[in-house]
Image (tube, rainbow, N blue to C red; front, side, top):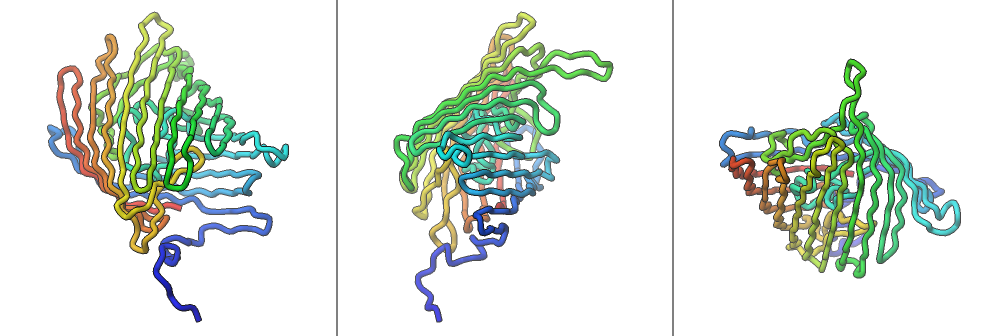
Length: 380
């Protein structure tokens, strides 16, 4: 007979050990990918521009298979947006050459410019990405990339085309590198940079005529249940290429952390128009009041793992800024303050609350909405 000892989070199997995968004798792991998010967005001080909403945000379903040190593959689909998400196969060089020269990945995956953008949506500190991340991040594309990870540094290089929906035709070359001089549980210093060049292709219309390449940069006020934007570049035509750059930093010291990122983009045109340059940044701090730390592995952050049976509680404060004015393009300026709280219930459940104070100015039109957001999510 077992005698109960002091309760630990690991003792609560219903919170942590869900039967969602099976392991075989050779180490192969086959499992389920599930992500469900239900959001509430309530707007105020918005001059009637926004509509309150409460509905599903994401409904991911998919599968993965992996053999540690050899390969891994995953495919999943978002039934809410009706779009394919990650769908790739990755092979470790260790399995081929007996030495680790990195991993090669084929398929659809995230492009690397935006530290916050490449973080899985169930692992981000705030409900939505910051202003510059939403406007500048290129998102997922089909391609091939190489990545190598070491304890104190990492690097990647990739070539990408359009996505699995056949949108965003063209191609992108991208790279990312980071130095991690401090890398220990609960103590991390990560300093990185990323860059890419996208060369978009114009679409062929119904008459078979080739149209010029276009792009646009815009973002809602860090709210995911609206398509209303306070600032926008509008549609830019005759695009030749788009250069993106990012600088990223992360510091974790026990229950405290600071994360920041600067993003900029230069769009060039083939019709003689001057370049269009935009930039933005965000910075935020977090405090896990229950004493745990944010997790860090493989060059990215992940959720707090509770050490208490009733979970872990985290508070966060973020400032973000985006400037879409340049030359004759008056896209507007916006900066947001976001206060957030997260309650981690085991390793598969999380409740989030955010309050956003947005401040925008586009062509003299000033709109400063407040947004109250809630999210309940389940993830595997």
